[in-house]
Image (cartoon, rainbow, N blue to C red; front, top):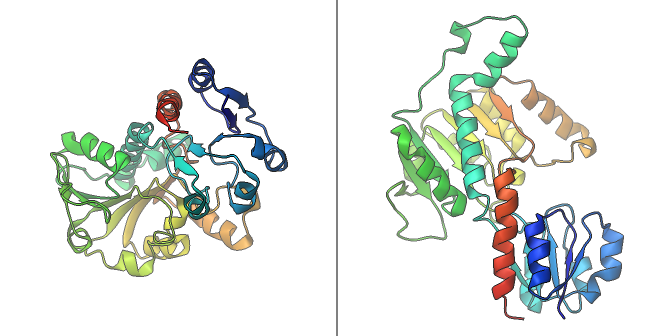
Length: 310
């Protein structure tokens, strides 16, 4: 009987379903890294979210491991190079939370355009400032989507009712124009975009992709949304762009360091500037965190494990 270890919280659909398929499932969402290192050698499969780094130290202990399933999108907490070299298959469930992330992105964008968060805070503090919260309309704007995978496509589809022009850039796709977005070069995006939204994985190639040089290539002042990974964006460079209005407003669901209690003094300084700015909206990596996606993620992983060839 194949043994699967689950070390993060998942919907019962996954644990129950794996049991019905005949797997020996050990559901240990509170397991520690030390416990994982001591026990991983027993298992054929591992299911994780993000709390634990599945690095070379862990993988060297995993003598029988055949697959790692990531309950979410991205695999940046998995040492994929080691897995590739040692025949360990890894997969995620990015298609399961695409709609949730796309809706969150759109909510952030509309909130920025209409000054909803800023105005709400002011009214709660007995400030009634209509002129200071005059918004702008999304209609007629050009929205650029960087990364046209599951989430990028979902966002483009949801934008289709807003009478906007949608440009999409994905380095790893070809001929991907559809009814909702036009395949574009980065030069076209730099020239035309009013809004840029990032939906790309964190890799060696994308780490700090968005820096001062990147932002200064935009012809217009832009609104920026990052709902992918915090480390694709250099926050100190973003602060400069916010100050000089190259970035008019930004919505960030992710940060370079999301363990706020461990921030360095430099990170705290950047964070405090971001949180005190009326140009920003910050949320705690909840773009894909809905009741529906919680269930869908487990359904997707259950299917992928069911068809996996051991």
